[in-house]
Image (cartoon, rainbow, N blue to C red; front, top):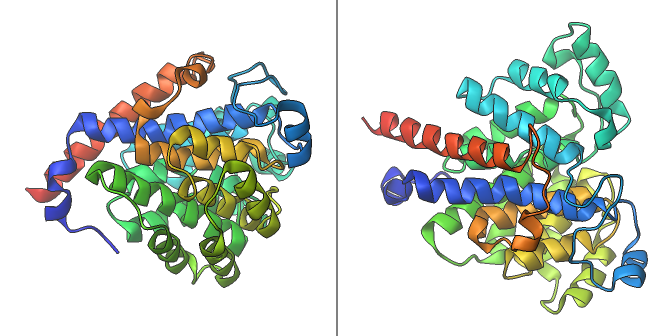
Length: 334
């Protein structure tokens, strides 16, 4: 399932990688922020209030602000760049350093952060949560290991297990990271995607972690293409779109595969209702990885919060990650 060196040799310009790396991580930020305004709303309530929501609206924060999804993603990427590898202890330390409870974290995270603050090891603080928190933040694993799915799988599981130990959460993190990786590959190669193969590859990648999650993902193959309102109905028939990984990761993948642009993927994701910030975040990461940042509507980029760990910081971090990836590739080929 890994890509031969010779096939990717011409894809390693810093600028090209940076475009898709920024696409994945800034795309996650955008999806998170767009969904933030209607987090927890059922799909019918979003439709009644907005028709089809496609503008940044206020929620727990002003328009354009991110939630725990993006905060943890930034922490993971910071650690990967600083350490130039996945060091779960360093990742856990960044999670703690950047922890702002007002961002909307799930209930179990508070105990995890308390245990870390009191000196517990990263591998002693996680719980048996089946939530989607392990998947919402995993885009940096998808970009940094996009050319090696074996390493990607191992890294996705390790970062997930800092907080989430349930098989569904581990499988969800692997599926989401794998989706980002496959989307990066397609973007770099400038080719289309076969949706059924994409889904099947992700199911195969995750099956030994949780066969039910893999089977639920395969249900996406049966969805009929159509306009966004029809896709919302079909996806909602299959998935609850709530905080459980098995109910949130597949519709995020589907939102990408069933549309043909970054904007339409994220719009579909946040209009599904339920855990809209997280499903939007995950769909935005996959679609951004495929299309790159050039496809982002300016009306979604400009309002993004831009403080110390905001938009420009994340863009710069992705650019550094692309440089590190290029350098690592050249070292490997020497």
